[in-house]
Length: 491
Image (cartoon, rainbow, N blue to C red; front, top):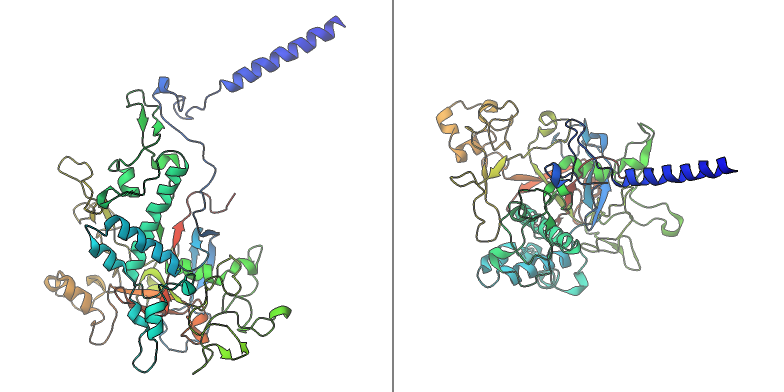
């Protein structure tokens, strides 16, 4: 009996020692054996990190390989979407298009922050409501009511060109990251920000934003000031919202995850749903259209008493069934801007991994001492193109602007006057003779998908069209995307 008591006491003591040892355990470097997160050992910080937070309005699109390009017969005979196998990394995408109320929130913020001293900022962001006008159609009510009236609050915003859509994405990045810092108790809510004092993610990370700080993070650096700002290494801030690339948009639209059996795609889709029909075969909604499009000449919504798509123009963004990724209106309602610069032969040129044409490599503007320059008048960090001198020793790129690489630049042109090619205006014309025989140049941006104004052909995700980035229409909208960092599979 005495031996049993001694054994039990020994086990208890061993347990206590194990608990004490575990509680005192500190993670250390596998290469130097120095302790992490300990000021006595230099204070190098390694934060625990599970996975990326899903930003507001986004859903995770698990990436993979797919055949990008036409899934329908080439009716326009452009042959600019020849099928090609590519791989798309996992990313996040808006569940639905950006709505009128979303964009009005953006304009309200701009007016509140910049409206007094920089009213031109608000004016430049306004959507062009005059896109609704037609010479031989009475659309004036849409000019006046579509963007502002609450009846259209959750309809997709239109009249927004490619440039304005990108600025909206930048603004959304800052508002979401500001909210995260407020939620984490680092910043205080400050609705009185004015002009350059507004929160900007790049400026904050560069140490150029003060703001109403509630609690900075404790700095483990023994030579530091005791507290510090949030860094990228902390994993708190989200990556930037942006427009999706053409490959990402097409991949997400097809939603082939619903047709995958192990590593086989058992049925290739024409549309974001299975089959070649445009009506649902679900018994409760038998015969109704699965998207908002123009069935034929003079038929925008069907017959009174049995409206097929119940929408003469656009429809609320959560109308109709989502695809297998949970994305609404990836066919119909409005066509959507993507990041890419248009070229007819892009599918032959671009990489088969994370395919994209339109790279313009930038770097932060530094002062004479090599420090990040002050913010501009709107509170943003100033960026500039990478110079050829800075990339002289590189093999992966030489120039900052790669929009016309292999398709419009000097090496691909039939013109060999190198002095003339240095003139950007001339260089943009020589390949496709812009404004003479073509409307293709470095400002031509791709938009994808069909709209309320299009026939069924354009509902196929493989179709592609383009428009100048400064122009807008009554049938093009947009949705935002975000890169996925870390594992491509959500935990």
